Image (cartoon, rainbow, N blue to C red; front, side):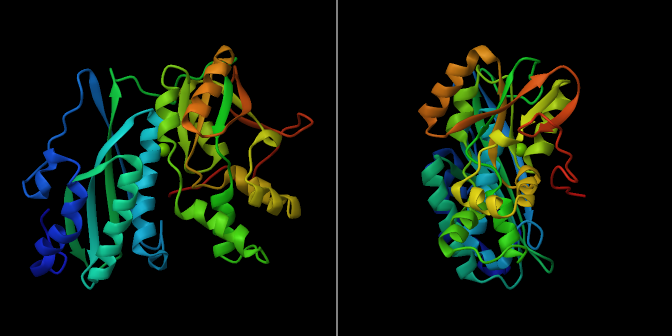
Length: 330
Ligand SMILES: [Mg+2]
C-alpha cells in the first residue's frame, strides 16, 4: 500500500490493522511486497468484481466503520454469489479524510476481520490515500469458478421458472424508517429491518450450488423488478413475476399489511442482495436441494416466456403498473 493517511503513520497503521487481515493468505506476504499472488486450483478461473461506496451516497458516516466495512465486503461477495463463484480474497482501496482517526481504522479492520472469518476470504492488498473530500471505499473481490463455469444473466429460456432467495423488501423499508417516511414501528421489528439494510447476506453457498442448475442469475441490488428486467433483456425473453408469491419477512409483511402501497416499494427498492435466478422447470427438485444444502430458502415467483421485458402480475393475473422499478444511479 502506498499513498498516505497522515503519511507519517500510514505504514504503522497498515501493519497494525490491515496486515493481520492477510494472515490467512500466505501469498499476500503480509502486505509487505508490491503485489500479492493468487494460486487458483487446476482448471479454476478467477472471477473478479468491484464495488465503490461513497460517504453520503452509499453509507452515512454515522453507520460506523464496522458496519460500513462489512457492507462493503458483503455487497462484493454478493456479486461473486450471483456468478456462482467461490470467494477467495479481496483488494481494498481506501480514500480517507486527512483527519480520520485511528479508532475508525481499527473499527473498519475489526468489521472486515469478522466477515473474513464468516466467508473464508483474506485481504490480499490494496492502497490507502488521504483526501479533503468524502470517504471513498473500493473493494475488488476475487473468487474462483471450476473450469470457468459461472452463472450468467443471459441464459433464461421460455418455460424456465423464476426464483428468488430469502426475502425481498426489508432493506428499502429500513431506509424508509431511517428517513422517517414510516414510523411507529416496534423496536424489534425496526432492528430486524435495519440489520438487513446494514448487513446483507451474500448467498455465496447457494450461488455456487446453482452452477449447472440455474439458467440465469443475478443478485438483486437495485430492485427486484428492475434487476429481473436486466435478466430478461440479457436473455432476450420476457419474465413474469407473480407479485403475491414474492417472499416477505415477518416484519415486512406486517408493514405491508398496514400500508399496501409499501409492497410496491418492496418490489422496486434496492439493497436486498438476494439471488434472483431462473432454472428449467424439470430442475425444480435440484433447486430445492441446492436451497436446503445451503440453508437459504428459495421461492418460485414467476416464469419465463417468449417476448421481452418484465411483467408483474397480481393475484387475478392483472398487470401491476409500477411508477418506478428500481434504483437509478445517475
Ligand atoms: Mg450485482
